[in-house]
Image (cartoon, rainbow, N blue to C red; front, side, top):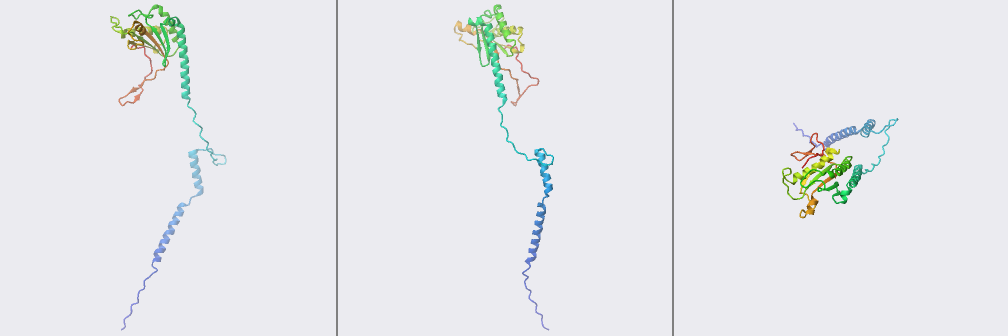
Length: 272
């Protein structure tokens, strides 16, 4: 019996077409999906866009329902702050008031100014009136000379309507003093300043505007070597302060400043 010849099997060279067809099919499906996702409903897009514009810009809408075109306008230039101008004007008014006060004091103290017993000075802080204590007090005493009481009352009348703080300073020479009433020049200068303060308060000047300080011989204006210099240093100075006291702030342990509860600015009539 004859053997069958096995037919030779030929290689299928077109097998790759199956994979290629599958790849093309998947690629087509991918682009279809991408196109579907990229398709936008134009009507819904406009509604959303207009809603966002209205929400963020809030422009007026006309009667037709269309949003008008907004034309940007240039921002105006920043004007010069008025605070500096107003503060400068306030300082100018205070200087004018201070000069008028100094002129009125010069008028009431003219005889003593001519004798060289009183000097009226204009300083950066305000007006300073230096009065030689020889015309106000007897040596080693703190009682006001009756003959000068009227002149001091005239000064007080000038200062009553003003609103400036007033500091009264007592100064002595370096000659020591020690008695039952004044153990040192500190007590003497402080009591002399307080005496003038009491006269001003009795004349109608508000107590919160008054301060009395005793400096003893710590702030001489002339050397204490000669009698003339010591006489020049024995004086009472009335300082009319043009600066408004600032509110105090309390510092904590961390160094931060916090205003104390219920704190207010005052100028106590105290003796230092």
